[in-house]
Image (cartoon, rainbow, N blue to C red; front, side):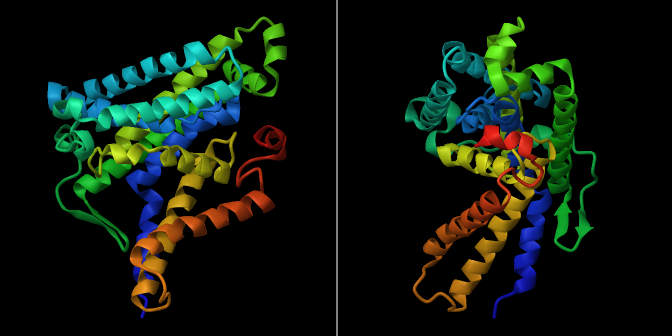
Length: 327
């Protein structure tokens, strides 16, 4: 028999998991890039990797406190955005896509190589960097919660911290897009020649957008590693594609879209994973192994997203004004 209660319980936990928060924040950064500015950034995984490794290396190798490690990661992402943007933002959008996807993969390979094993941990990654953040935990030791949302003090701490960052970033983005800066950014998305004709420095605005969305991705990378180790295999190009799926699921040029899209994506992924795995154990899928079952969950989630694109192509929170651009 399949334990449906356990399957739904595991899926419900993804609603507030640190992973969901990290993906929501990274997708919000992509919303600034792609949804609002029209920048085709396919290297958000690179920004997340810089946040993760910047924080972990600063803590382990240099003994920096939490705030300094966060600043190192942000600084690295700004430099990375400048390196990517300076040669490409004056060219067509597809050049940025090519450069970002290649640069993110180069970063992953650098972190994987044995040359810097003492610093990056190579393919084994890094761990043991959570002590500084755990020391800041104001929640007394113990277990708290109800039903599937029962966690120890540290698990609640990283969830509260992660979702607080997401909420603050969403509020900041909402205010920013209602400002004159945001109106220029959306104008660039629609017709950058018209914005340039009004005397605006389109190149400068694009660079600012690339840096801001990249910083969101960097902070997402830091949240992503709090419940797990830093492993370079986590930052493959598929990570960026998952974030794009989340963005389009919720709505490309929206604030709530990336957040709700991330929740739906991870709840569906967890549900299908649990259902298929236990279905294999129960003999419902006699010609399928557990490894094949793990891949099937992505197929099922993909089908759900495809149906959404067919019947609501603007996303859950999107509107038809943005649809022409997204297409």
